[in-house]
Structure formats: C-alpha cells, structure tokens
Image (tube, rainbow over all chains, first blue to last red):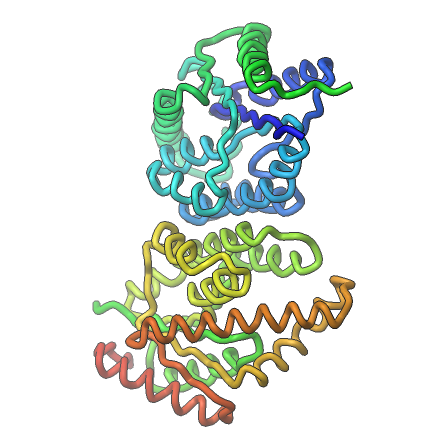
Length: 224
Length: 224
C-alpha cells in the first residue's frame, strides 16, 4: 500500500483555517479519499489535556520554554497515535496547525528562535514533514483585527491596561506573521502561500488547486 | 547576594529519596539555611497537571517521545517558576529528581538514548546543572523488589500476563540502573554515588557529609 498524504493548514488565529479544512475535507470525501482530520494542539486524549493546560495558562504564568515543550509533547503523541498510522495505511491526513505554528508563535512570537524549534522537531518528531502546507495569510491588518476580537477576553482576564496589552499583542502578531512569511520563503516547494483578503470561495479554489496537483503528482489512489 | 546551591536526589522508585530529602531538609533548616524543596515531575501548578497526565498514562498509551517532552515541559516550568528565582535569591534548592531521571528512565529505560535527552536539556533548560547530585543506588535486587511492589497496581491495570509484565519491568529497571551508573561514571565531580544496602541513618550520614563539603567549598552563607 502506498503511503498517504500529509497536509497541514497554517495561519494566524482567525485566518479561516477551520472553515477551509472543513471545505477541503468535504471536497476530498466527495472524491472517495480516505481522510483523517486532526488539530494541534489536541487531536488525542493526551493532546486535548495538553491543549487545556496551554489555554488555561492565559490566566496564569506558563514559561515560554515549557509552552514549547508542551507543543512538542502533543505533537509526538499525535504522530504516534494518529498521523503515522493513518499515513502508513494510505490515508490523507489534514492537520490544523503543525510545527510551522510552533516556529511562528513560539520561535517568532515568543522570540525563542527558529533553530530551537527545528532542532526539537528533529529530536522529538523524527523530523516528519508535511507533503503540502497551505498557509493562509490575509492582510496583516485583517488578521490582527480578527485575532484581537478572539483574544479580547484574554486582555480582560489579565486585567492589564488595555492599551499596553494591545500594543504587546500587535508586536507579538507582527513577529508571528513575519516568521510565517520567512518559512514560506525558505520552503517554497512545501508551503503554498495564500495571501490577501480573498473570499472563502476564492481561498478554497486555491487550496483545491494545490491539493489536486499533489494528488496527481504523488498518485495517491482514490478509494471506492 | 551570592547564588544559592542546587542539590538533586536521584535513584530508582523506592530507593528512599523522599525520606532522605526530608532528613536533609531538616538538617539544613537546623543550620539556618533558607531552603526550597521541590520535585519532578510536579512542583508547580502546571507541573502537577503534567505529573497527573504522565501517571494516568500507565493505563493508556503515551508515546515515549511525548513522555520525554512532557518531562522537559515540567522542568522548564519548574526552573522558571521555582528553581531559578530561589537560586538567584541565594537559597538552597533540594529537588527530588531532575534531568538524570529523564536520562535514566526515558534515555535508558525506554531506550531513547542519552544524546536526545542531553540535547533537549540544552535546548529547553538552558543546560542548568545541579551543584551536587546524590544518587541513591541500593543493590539492584533490593531496588527491583521495592519498585515491583510500587508498580504492582500498574500490572493489574495493564491486565497483562503478570509474568511477562514482570520480565519487561525487570529489563526496564536494569537499563535505568545501568544508565544511572553510566551518569555517575561520566560526571564524578557532580554526582555522589551512594551504593549498597545501607540503613537510613548511614545514607543520611553520607549525604550530609557530601552536602557539608559543598557548602564549605561554595561558602553559601547561613542565615540568622
């Protein structure tokens, strides 16, 4: 049996990843592909507990290095429990965030650097690489506005001066954004960059085009 | 203010670490030292949740690499939240298990290798080293018997054939044991090896002697 295809979706909070994963999953199912949809952090029982731990930390202190190690613990578990078995049995895996997110958020946003992230990925995840990564980057301004709305509750929880919190948040997301662009420039073969403020349908079209190309290239057999 | 002293206790399950940490803590307090006692995994709110996750995994599947990454997440949090602040303010930190445990259990026992553990320690923990490590190694047979009693419940939970489980367990603990000896041989300056089936008082005497020597050598000031 030929090995499956590993597809990841990446982008800032609120970039529309979830909507697009659902659309893509429906498109693939219609074409009789066997697919597995998962997300990081999360996607396994252990992973969902790690996810809760990380999200709860918004109201407590979590050291950036601890956060990064938790992301990799989650990922190692997901690879062993979900991703590798699915790929080995020829399925298509759609994963909402993978190591690019850790590089963008912890490496870029929290300024831990790309080198540490890539080295951890090598050590803990056997350097598993997606066959294709779809990176959704609406304009920075649009992304920031969406991320802000999502994180408003966090500012309230922190009880920080709202202006200062927003400034820090803007600088953080700017670094995440820059790191995503850096990754796309570094690995143009793997990463398809979907830029600009496109409609949901337009983004879906671009995604489907890129996925169809890989499916043809790798000749992953459709079932049924 | 001079930097404090970082002491770790290591050994197999049931080697008497906890008893000895309590005795050593009492001895140091009597001499007016400011001390902080902590343990790994655990020792912080985040760490206790990670500890629960790892212990619960005895009845579910936790990938070895995920387990190792969880240990380092716990450790990074403990360093940032407890250990570094205490050392910076001149305190003596007593820690029940540290990276040597990860090297012995995950590196040796689970056969992930020393290299990955030491590299993760460098990346995630800034390579923080204890000033002194007290390694308690009663005879292998005595250690194994104690570890077995402690882990009997695990065998029951696993529902495995008891004989096979015990065989696997023996081989696992043999590798942990060997790795501990390897660490002691590699770092004789840092690691004081307390071997053999000594009484609690005898072990305490050896520990106190080693600690007193470090205190004199590093001239950590007593308070009060």
